[in-house]
Amino acid sequence: MIIREMKVEDWQEMRNLWQTTEGIGLGRSDTIEGLEKFLNRNKGMSFVCEIDSKIVATIMCGHDGRRGFIYHLAVAKNFRLQGIGKSLVEKALQELRKQGIHKCHIFVMKDNEKGKNFWSKIGFQKRNDIEVFSIDI
Image (tube, rainbow, N blue to C red; front, side, top):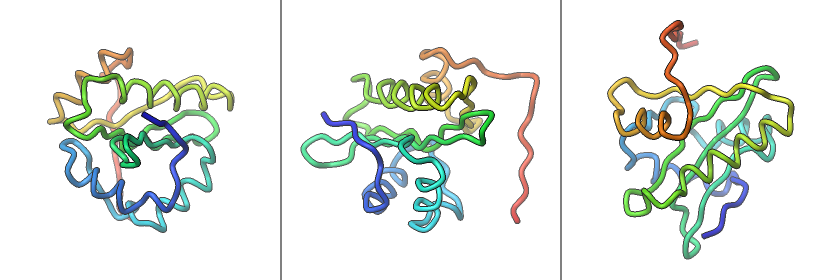
């Protein structure tokens, strides 16, 4: 198992994983151009896990200078419950800490029970005091 920094060249393999992972919502920004912009803005903060030269897990992480955000944590079904997702989260949080970020958020689809259980199990707390509003621009 190798955890390494995510590269733009990983996009197609990662997109295939994301499309087959329940609970991952893909949007207009999930293009190769969007990934390149994200990785350039958040250098050294997003990672993939490879087993036998195949990407089996991903995590995208960035921050706005104040709060960290995690996107697209995905682990291929046959590699779950082996600590890979937790290892990726720990690596991303370590990078946030190095950059002086002290709080991180993750957006989880309301019907993603497995995802909500995972995040709770590793120490993230569900917020009941805020709601998310979005607008397409």
